[in-house]
Image (cartoon, rainbow, N blue to C red; front, side, top):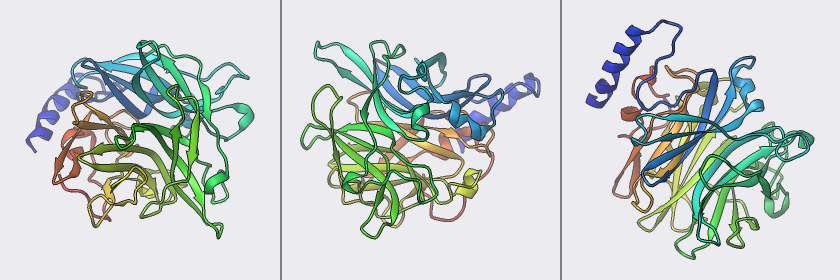
Amino acid sequence: MHRLFGYLVPFLFFCSLVSPATAAYPPGVYAVEGQYIWDSWIVEDQGVLHRYALSAPKEGYTPNERHEHAFVRHAVSNDGGVTWKDLGPAVTPQPKGTWPDHVVWTSSVMLHKNEQGEKEFLMFITGRSEEDDLTQRIGLARSTDGHHFSVPTVILSPTETLGYDITDDDGIIMAWRDPYLIQDPADGRWHMVFSAKSKDSCGVIRPTVGHAVAEDASFTSWSLQPPMTLPQYYRQVEVPYMLHRDGKYYLFVSTQANPLVDNNAGKEAAFRGYEGDSITGPWTLVYEDTDRIYGHQIYAPTLFEKRRGSGEYAAVSFYSLDTGCPLTGTPVVDIRWEEGDPHFEFNEDLGPCLTQPPSSGAKEAQP
């Protein structure tokens, strides 16, 4: 409570100094005038947090229309996420005829040394081109400074082999997006997880997590693996993230039970988690009796190591429309660990933007 009060006092004071038409946000919120901001992902480099987020102009577009005008913008923080300096677009749609020439969707970034031993920012993106209609492909863009990225190249295209489904026959848009990489300490290989759908022998479509393994150090060749089996299923599964800690693997996803509804409360949107003994599971509920971590006022939390090699993690997300800071990036959210379980300090760290209580229903993880 004292942390929330600490956010609330300066927030209310600032609001008293500005006109009603001027948006005022508490510390740590990532907002850009005239832009919708949603899915974010972060990488730390020598004390600097590089934050990337989906962005689209507000003028001329409703919140729901933003998805068809999305690109990636870049911000940095030198104070651990208390303030953000917006640097503008980083990965944008390409000229017509060059993939992706329509939109860039949720991606992830990591730091890696190339064959010459030079540092590179690798952005694994979701892209769509006009000629592909709704088809999503996963690609890779490279940068030496974290802001100026190369033209993305496709590294993993959708396929219906190995039990994957790439249709919208279940009434929900196809899924082949949201790539995230993790190096497995068990074998040293790089693994990609991504949003996908599977189809069983009876033809039942289940949204799930896709899996691929890098074939070489260039990250351009991938061996597709069977989709993962989750202990519970939802109509839509998005933005998978994974980490390894103290011998356990943790898989986090964002889900929607009713994705065709136009608000996150009605969608029953939630952040969920699983744990297992290997990078492919089998997975069990993160809190033994529930997989639910938080919902619905934020969506698509992503994790990052607060300082590389520290083993300490934090999360970042974006605020839903029914909050005090709609479609802006959240402050950094701390994660603490108790008896091997991750506990996300959402209520404590998200401050006065949470103007409504968390959704009722399934049990919440307690701070």
